[in-house]
Length: 170
Image (cartoon, rainbow, N blue to C red; front, side, top):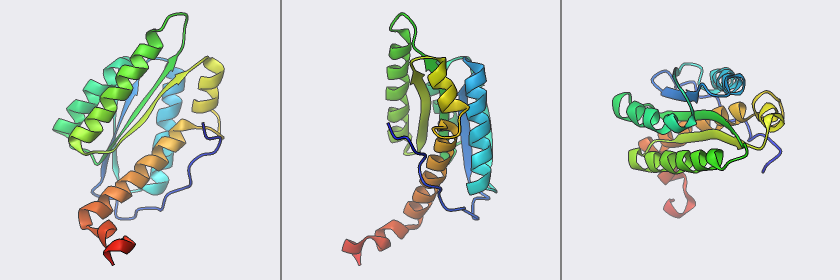
């Protein structure tokens, strides 16, 4: 696990026609609300003109089906999945985390759309607090930066810029 946030992406001033969607669990609301707030605040810095929609679902297990509906109906440029699973005495949280992870990866590949996975599986509330409410390991900030970077990458791919920039194609 990295102890530092990823570097800040460039500000995309041409983000006016970009659409992002956040799908966030209502479960463990204190933590997921903090993730949502941090993502929205951070996205405003890097994609100031982008439209950001928020969909709330009951729990982490419901996130993939909501993401799929958004991909089919709204076709956002990027989706950010947010949730917090806290391990308990059974393996339920692990099962949900694996299911969500596999489903989100499959959707990203099938729909060729970046899905930023910040459905966190943590050991306890102290870890949740550190990753959702803290400043150093804040996964909401991390998710926003990854989303802005992927929006830029996909914009370059659509324009064919990345092919021209690669040294072997020069």
